[in-house]
Image (tube, rainbow over all chains, first blue to last red; front, side, top):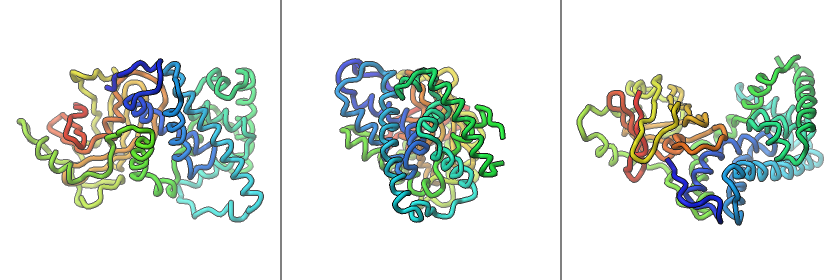
Length: 171
Length: 192
């Protein structure tokens, strides 16, 4: 049991609280970062979110912690992906060069590539909803868009994902 | 092709897991990174490094008090890296559903448990969040585990994943599993 030693509603987080939050959220943030941004850098991106959290002057309520961390990861992943896309444009052959994939990783890498080719908003919505298990409302809030847009984009994204996977002869 | 939501969830979650190459760059190293980051933000984390030697000392202490204590052991104790493990006493951990016992300081979530698989992975729940990862132990009884995946609900229950990552020693006595930290304090007791 990790008791909430100090009042989380006021001031900075205690080290105990931070530690508990870290253990609770780290793995999920890494997965989020792996699908949204630069996969090999996913752990660094997740850790940077905690550094930002520790430096945040004030946290209103515990429920906001997860959203704060996820927003950090989403923002960082956006800029990482812009950098990756630029790299692909400038150095296409180098950027695509991959170490030989282990058999278990073939599908994993294919799904990641298909996901990476989706429009950003579709990708973010799919990952937040189906990997981070956020509700429509939570996803809308995090991305700063309306719930209706989340729903319609989810619909489009599922169709786009299916189309691209079948174009890849997937199963 | 058709993709229902469940299938998408399954595909994306799998894609979110590390590839073999990424795992090689993570695994045990990830634990050390944990420490580095947390000290960056001014936090002391007890998840420190690889402490096989310390674990042996704790092992001697932990074996007192009654019943026969079986060591969790494998042939190669030199490098306790996560991964498949063989050995007779592995069976003590594997294939059993370990339920945390209440203690003076903690009341576990109602459906909390952990299970260990022979392939070096564990999974479980703190009664709120599902989680899983890899674990290892050596012939000395030293134990280590990392959390590699967890759901993200926010609840006030004891964090079983935290016990596992902090545990440096595991003792199985009959139907009881005791996890102790590097400094020897008891993290949690499980029964199966």
